[in-house]
Length: 287
Image (cartoon, rainbow, N blue to C red; front, side):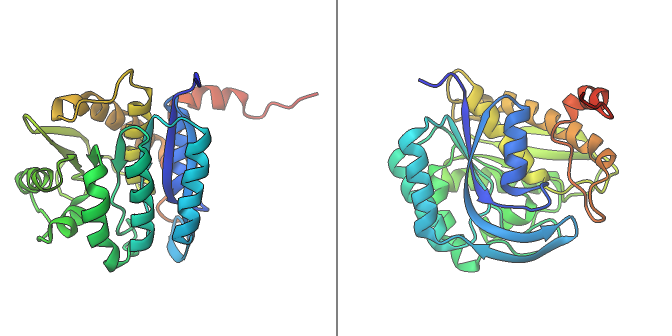
């Protein structure tokens, strides 16, 4: 049995390194999980936006998963960008049959830049095939509206109502991310069996926000992989992980501008906790 606690990212690639599989692997490593990855799409993107998407065929996505799971014991899975109904069904088919620890589903539909990342035909497949397998689903306000076929929430109370309704429909614990709302705090809603909880952090004035959704969901997968047992499928079971993941993201957001990467919405700093050590080695040369 492997001594490492293994997390798996099933997502698209981001050449700029701030989102997608690249962000997930950085987050896994920063939080002490061994990262593995299955690619669902190649993208041409930067901090300025997405210029193109090249999907990986569903059969090859399935093959990646099968070959990996034949060899490596996976303790938690984060699923992000899937792109098409065929890929959604391929991923759901393998994970539904084989399992790989708690599934954290980030229903990536639209990038922060506004670029569409999920075909309209794939939304139904996401609802019917993949949502029932999820332990935790992490939509933002627009994504929750699409999943519920409802107008986007405008207030925290409307987020509470939509998170509870999505939990009732799919059975998974729901973390509805409230970053799209106004207010001094960014408030997320965690809804599951038992009470509903609000998790807030002060809103930061920064443009280094590329990959925030990917980073939060992969942080939750890493923490679930490291846990001695899968989180209970309740609000109380996931709340400590959500609080820790939000603290990690808050630090990454606060430090992101210091990276100075790109000329658009720059990435968060996934290794912000290691910044002191990184600064201490800057400029060193080897003899």
